[in-house]
Length: 547
Image (cartoon, rainbow, N blue to C red; front, side):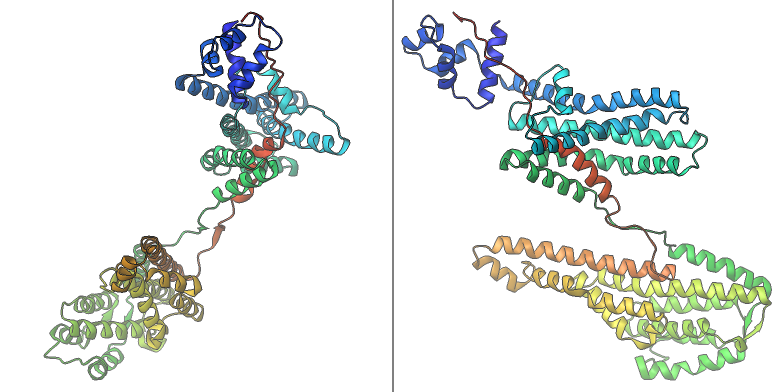
């Protein structure tokens, strides 16, 4: 009796009644009531109730909330379990494919209760009736603690959402697994069922993480505003946001893979005896020293590595695949010189060499069969893709060691590339447009860069931070904008490099919102309970006289 009395008093406390109101209720019209006697002796209502019915300790409160959470899981899994049992029985009687009845029933059971709840609530509103909701009927059949405070209702909603989502995901996975071994799944109905299972089990870990968070948010908004519709909307928005993911694109070959393909084609070329006309090759290369002198100040005595490369280029060695590969390595070695002027001259020479090799006309090819010609085209295409991606990746490499900041250095590099007519000739018209767009950056990039200037890394921003009472917040915003601006630039150049290696924009397999419908629907189902009136049972204060 004492425990029941304590539970009833604490239930009243959780309902918001003050100790004075509870004491007045307990006294009633009984002058011999012990509470009345204690009041007459000068004890305060709080002291009296603490003696007869102590408030729950922190440990007891924690245990209670665990029990409320378990109740939430039980209530959400009850219709799933019942649906699975009914589905298995019906599937066996109707001859459904082996193993599909139970998971289909589980999915249907998990959806039946919240959907029916919504229909009954609509009927009650239209008919001014008070028909009990299916969820309330199920809840009354499950023993255990009931949520009685806003916090407890949030706990029960979140754990209930976790249980319901776990049941739905499990049912979806079971449909997928059963479909792999079940016969006769070629009909549209069977295929549609499989599609439902796949959607229910989409990104299962993400759903299980998002479900309790979205449900807790929805119930919390309902408690704070008193508006179940606002709670439902908040829960759905939270769940939908959790479903957002980076765009999933098709695979892009790495530079190493392209080089391997190119090497394989070069081996075909080598076996075929492929060669460039050495006379034409030497004539073209012999014209380059004067061009390099006028454009980058090349001097043979000042740039010995480049001079050595020219000596090799003008040799009488046959210009077969092995020689072409070796020559590019020699020029590339000079392009890595520590001397700035030699490095510039070598890079210019490398561009000229690549241009000639990539665009050699058929008349410049003196040997090689039809198969070799196809291999040559494929090798050139892969080689061109690597070359294009290198031009983009070099911009990032230079930005990594730039003193002026990574983002502006990348922007300057893209702009310089876009203005370099000769280098831009390597790219198709569509690729050139993509480079120009990336160089511009767009309005968002400009805005982030402007805000980033308030970072205290600059003298002006440091002074502003020191004299402005909101300087710390401004500095934080500036630093965040600077990081976001850099991250966005990196996304742009990485996308460009991927496009160059693939030869076209990577195909979009799944958009950023591909998971949103499933997450939004799941959140809506989980948050429908927030629309239902709270059913706290018929607990009464049956206090015994003389207590």
